[in-house]
Length: 387
Ligand SMILES: *[C@@H]1O[C@H](CO)[C@@H](O)[C@H](O)[C@H]1NC(C)=O
Ligand SMILES: *[C@@H]1O[C@H](CO)[C@@H](O)[C@H](O)[C@H]1NC(C)=O
Ligand SMILES: *[C@@H]1O[C@H](CO)[C@@H](O)[C@H](O)[C@H]1NC(C)=O
Ligand SMILES: *[C@@H]1O[C@H](CO)[C@@H](O)[C@H](O)[C@H]1NC(C)=O
Ligand SMILES: *[C@@H]1O[C@H](CO)[C@@H](O)[C@H](O)[C@H]1NC(C)=O
Ligand SMILES: *[C@@H]1O[C@H](CO)[C@@H](O)[C@H](O)[C@H]1NC(C)=O
Ligand SMILES: *[C@@H]1O[C@H](CO)[C@@H](O)[C@H](O)[C@H]1NC(C)=O
Ligand SMILES: *[C@@H]1O[C@H](CO)[C@@H](O)[C@H](O)[C@H]1NC(C)=O
Image (tube, rainbow, N blue to C red; front, side):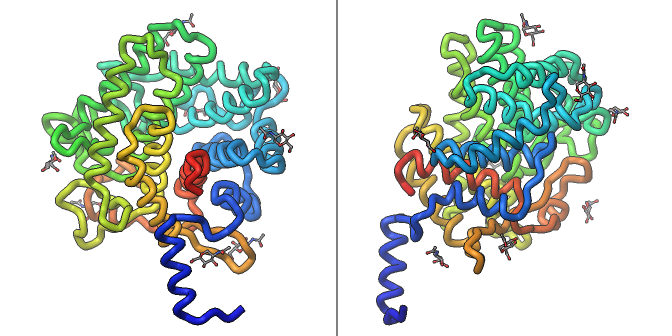
């Protein structure tokens, strides 16, 4: 079909202006099936857990029976009939390996809470938290032994969303557990939050022994977008299950709403967010608009509005971010699949945590830490009737 150039331009403008999709396919399941077409393998690693978490949300939102069946079989395949979680080492303490617990509980719940093997597997992960090495103040070490006495925002998402969901399902009245989860958030807030910008640095070292630790707070030097994305997502996900009867509820809610404000103020005119989000670093050579956090923020804003935790004013922030994802970070492949671009592979506090370090990490296509959150965001856009 040959349309005059002007008509194409006008059509493009109309689409952008109304934010209507340019396809009959929902983006959430489109990205999920695109990932599956590349041959996904599930295991207990957090990246597989995030991708499969995205597929679970997409499949549920769209009631896509093929994807629901795939993801059910995938999660089932890593839990043996006696409840052994394949690949999991119960004496290796790394918060990343707790994230799969969310997929296990989601599957158990979605399938009518019938199959006890999931409860046994989840209980194993939960009991490991009772043995976890902790900082003197009681924070879970990010990893033993290499991140001794360190807490990272990433770890809050990986472990405490599971800890909260497990507690809400099996021990809803265990105030000791709720207080323990609250403590994890409190410690991160105390050491990493900037009360002027309302953003949080990537992590902190409680004994301040690490090269990058601030001598007063112990915090690392920069606000890294993906860590803040994990943290923002963690807050909305735990608030979904946190009993409003717990005294801590309103404080956790205020952590979420004040962070929503800080992130909104840091949004670039393009709709995205900088890899390093400290105010003075916007536009600095080497810094760039990164896709994974843009997807995470979109998800957390829309879910926060859906749950009645955030006001409607944030919807425009989320929709603007979503539009950028579609315009800049979605690549339409010739074979009909979608690719997700512009994701930084990693950001670690294992080295010097310098500006040169963060900005020198490679940017890749189809990284699950970006595409998984894109599925989360797409599902929320669809639930809101915006796609
Ligand atoms: C959607 O829009 C993009 C960019 O405008 C275009 O490349 C792609 O072919 C469109 N896809 C469909 C299925 O219409
Ligand atoms: C579709 O194309 C993309 C990009 O070339 C590729 O990565 C993917 O494996 C292809 N999928 C199928 C099912 O051929
Ligand atoms: C989901 O799809 C199945 C068929 O695939 C149908 O039986 C069921 O009613 C649908 N559920 C909802 C909530 O739409
Ligand atoms: C559970 O099953 C796995 C493999 O199916 C087996 O290796 C393991 O020993 C079993 N554990 C127990 C406690 O029975
Ligand atoms: C489990 O992790 C511990 C601590 O890192 C390690 O010493 C042990 O060798 C691991 N076990 C297996 C089976 O990998
Ligand atoms: C309640 O939570 C605490 C802290 O995690 C734990 O030590 C304890 O075993 C839990 N109690 C029950 C009854 O499950
Ligand atoms: C806290 O945020 C303000 C406003 O962006 C900024 O000027 C200040 O440098 C930040 N402090 C730290 C320690 O990053
Ligand atoms: C920090 O590490 C990066 C590599 O990750 C290196 O390029 C840089 O020179 C180091 N900076 C300092 C101050 O040591």
